[in-house]
Image 1 (cartoon, rainbow, N blue to C red):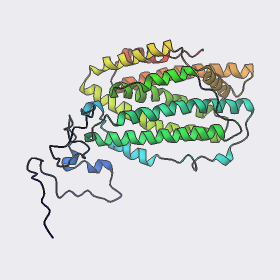
Image 2: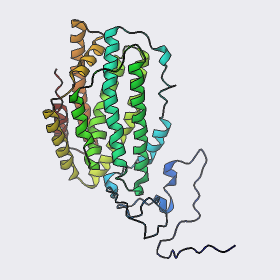
Image 3: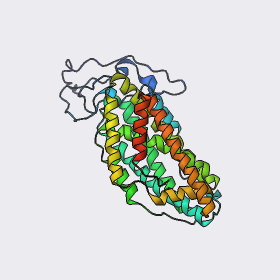
Image 4: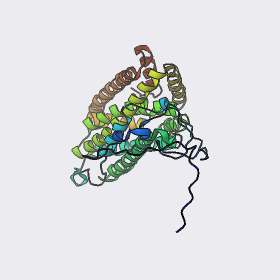
Length: 345
């Protein structure tokens, strides 16, 4: 049998040998940060789709990845977030006790179905936008690629579970407002990773976390509450990435704060032109918060929704300070984000 003639690899670099990761209890992603594979570059070499640590033929084509700098995507806890994402997966078919859904009064069931319809729109956005980002990121930052891939899976599951909730209990999918659609289109149109990630992971999903918590608390039955709870657990990981990443980015490049504030301002101007939030959704929130659609219940619900918006503002400010903004600028960005959607309160 003829010997296979291998190419001259003298210019490829020398690959590792003798690496042995301890496998007791399973190999975690952080355990693989050893040898050349553990050297995360500040700027990615043009190695195509090769895994970090490989010895790469210098003649590989340039894949044209747009995100090639570590500070644009990295978070110090990114490997742990990937592990959390795997452990946190749940099944929208079997992990929700669908058979236990009680029959609800029509006003409450309509409100749940309207909220579910709205949630599906938002979850599609939260699925499509990270998917759009993925091909921009050089595989040198594989942990980030894996985490965003897990987010796409999370959001797909959320689309599934809210569709099932809308159809599961004698109701059905409800109204889709162009106001919501214009808001989401303004996010999906983002092409720059930094702007898109900030608007999604810090401002958008950070606010969404408070909404999910609120809806869990005012849910008319335990099954619906479980849906919101499980979705909120997933969103917590996504916000965790955003906070960790932008803290990392701002520590290394404080000037990025001004750019992020400008991104929030540009989107605010767009949302104000698009007329703000959906009255269908706000009405549904008030019905759920008040426990029904009578005038007294609606007034109670209005007060609780007003309190929710105040809580959202406080949460945004807290998270912005955590990532490295001064309190005054955090207040300004949060005000911008909140003013972009008129809440009819």
